[in-house]
Image 1 (cartoon, rainbow, N blue to C red):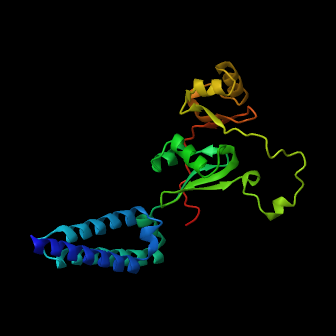
Image 2 (cartoon, one colour):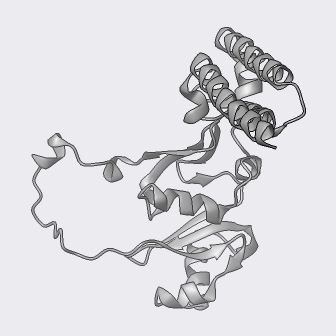
Image 3 (tube, rainbow, N blue to C red):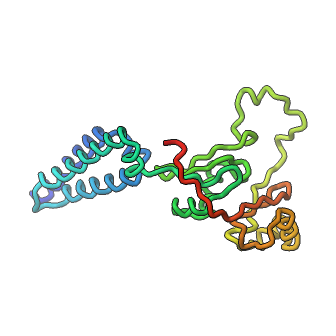
Length: 243
């Protein structure tokens, strides 16, 4: 029993050392920006290391050899990805345009495996409570959403500080845009919260040439009571703009 415990302890130390060495060889990508392939590889190597540490009646060298083979394969695949755009897109994935210039792409949201509510949540986490403040939003190949704000919503810089700020009240409270239509369904509680009703909503939709609510993918009301409508689009840009 004591020998088994000592072997587990020794194997645990050995697996940690092996993981550290292999991670150093593969680079820091395993610890930060994981692609789908990196994620699968990390799980596989970690599982083998755990088995190597806890198996008391097996060979120490077999799981170590398996870990090494995984690491070598990943190393050569990374080399191919650097040299070939097709390999890089196949193993690393592609970025997807989710929103651009007032267009919300439902098909690309589906490809990214997120719905419009999750997308809006990610935008709020990035500091954008009004989708109209966003010029472009993309799902990167590491699973994170990056946002390009409109000119008026970009962070303040030194040049902006020198501009004339007369008429601006910095203490004026602001309100996030409220969703009133989601996936073709009117959210009546949200609509009531904005101080409006379904008659107002239908009139505003009519002004924008929309008679069928089911064709609306998303509609929001901002703090100025302006209705922004995003129709359900069949198109979806498939080109990767940054690769």
